[in-house]
Amino acid sequence: MKRILVLGGALIIAFSVLSAQEKQRTGWGWGGVPAINYNADEGFGYGVVGNIYNYAEGGYAPYYWTVQPQIFFTTGGKQEHWLWFDSPYLLGNGIRLTAELKMFKQLYDPYYGIGNESEYDELLTKLDENDVPEDTTLFLDEHYYTYYRERFSLKADFMKALSTHENGRPKLSVLLGFGIQSTKNDTNGTTSKLAVDLADNVISPKEIDGGLTNYIKLGVIHDTRDNEPAPNSGHWTDFVVEIYPKLLGSDYQYSRMTLTDRRYFSITRKLVYAQRLLFEKCFGDIPFFEMSFYGSSFKVNEGLGGSKSLRGVLKNRYLGQTKMFANLEIRYKFLEFSAAGQDFYLATNEFLDFGKVWGANDESDLSNFHLSYGAGLHIGWNENFIIAVDGGTSEETGLQLYIRLGYLF
Image 1 (cartoon, rainbow, N blue to C red):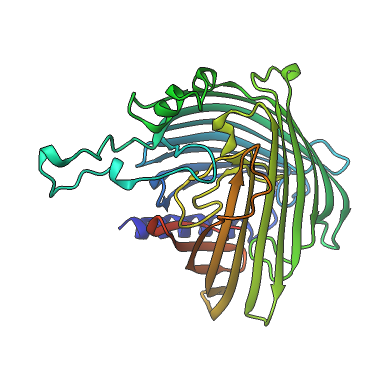
Image 2: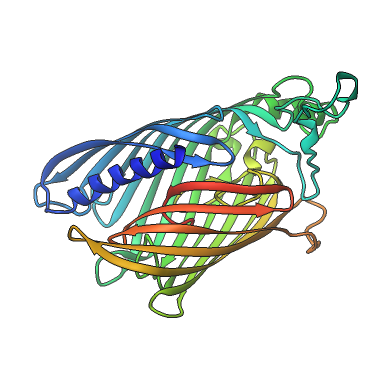
């Protein structure tokens, strides 16, 4: 039933998007669609995304500016509400402005400890129904590997194209961004893994309190992809530096450098090999709740582990000051057809993901990479709209299912 709702909501979104592309618009436009997905780490997600567009006189493409509010919940105790603004033209001179105001709350955010060798024992969180009461010594709490996290953020990015493709899409760009972030944490009781690490001085009381992590971001982006939603060839490479200084009010002084390289190779017209390699290193006083994030010029996500990094590995399974991961995929369009004047395709993707994290004292250790693998089905509508279903597994999990819009990278 959940999968049907996900796909149904995705089709509504697709209809809305395609209808908006039928003619050149001027003035104002608006709409709203369901926000529905499924994620093995967070459960069934539901909510709504609104769209307010201003095309201005002359019909700017894709718009002069847009504001997109979202209200989103999951059955796993997560809330993620935001107001997103984007304008390619408001500032003129080829400068694109994007801004985001977000409220994030997770009752049961994952925490398994810090380091590449952090231990996980499923029996600590599950009570065997066949056990008698005096034989349940392993079970501690179903939320042992979780903590409470609440986060408010305000971000703005300014991107300037230094060169463009023939269609006007940026090829080489530079980025300047700013952010204000406030985080509050709790241990979810005295028996949680985070509470244990707090007692053992692995985590400081200051980190439990959270605080401000304000930053300035600099970046450079080189993009030669032939098609953004489903590339067949080209690359998309970005290098981003984030600095969190006390001067900007940050309670923690550290920096983050992230290099991400995504490449696409067309083997035949229907067969594509795609790969993403990410390396990130943090310097300074970075708190544990910031170690899960990895920098980007586009969307900031979390890992190591989960739907955005190692599919089939538990979300945020490994935390460290330095991280590296890779996603390798074979994508094959096995069926193409037309219906009602629209073009569709079905594609499979087989993937192999691997990665690891390092602490301050083990950066020369190249052993014990964590591995996951799996496959997926993608439904493409006119090349630009894609419904994705991926299933992955690893040595610690069974099949982990993820349903979303678009390819992972």
